[in-house]
Amino acid sequence: MLRIITSSTWGFARLGHPESAGRLEAIRPILEKYPQELLESPHPNVLRHTAEVHSERMVRRAELRSAESGDLDPDTPTSPATWRAALLAQTAALLAVEEAAREPGLRLFLPTRPPGHHATRQQSMGFCLFNHIALAAHHAAAHCALSPVLVVDFDVHHGNGTQDIFYTRGDVFYFSMHQYPLYPGTGLAHERGEGEGEGWTRNLPVPPGTPRRQQMAFFKEVLGEVSASARPRLVLVSAGFDAHRADPLANLLLEAEDFGEMTREIVAVADKYADGRIISFLEGGYDPAALRESVETHLAALAGD
Image (cartoon, rainbow, N blue to C red; front, side, top):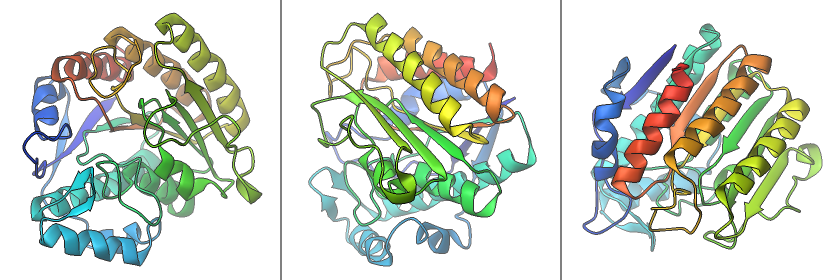
């Protein structure tokens, strides 16, 4: 069963910024095809949980800058509406994990805004205040007896924040396929984790213009390897759709149907190891038409259609 967890506010959009509320408006007709849970208010302990994956200094800075409608970095503007949207996104991450723990076979999609996978333990960056998927992975492993966790990130940009947070941990496996070179400049193949996390990070950097069938073959091969290694009890997806050929921020060549194909591969992994549990988080995707078509194929595959 597929459900959508969404929130009562989608936050602030600076005029001309590619990461805008218009992205969620573009996919609203697709989301409305599925059962939805609407979050009206943040979890009462959301900041305490957030401080388990981000430094207190980072959280406090994000709060203060948002109150001032200031910028956290050149790419990451804020406002009080941004702060509320980020807290609701963090709340959605917590609730989604708790629902998945109670309900084997559950698939959830969280159209979170702002996105999250660039936020490191110490720094908001790259359109991201907080790392929602990292909070979900930590909450699952530390509090919900759903360890190990596999995070699959097919956003065109490397999820440097997620990698940073789990690089030395052996309970969350991070796998990213992304364009390289491209922002943020991380995610090379030799980055494999350290200490207890050695071997628990796997990066698949692909050059600009890689033929789509070749990229898909790479993805399927590496996903098979990492899932057999991790044998996850929960699968989380950083679902960025900016590897689409129409996206203005990158140079890969995927079509909407390819995101459905990747999702079916992820579903097969979840069915094999994780009692079907999958939680997918919206990350990038900045061409409205391409985003809408790609999300439609992704959700159809999650739903088993």
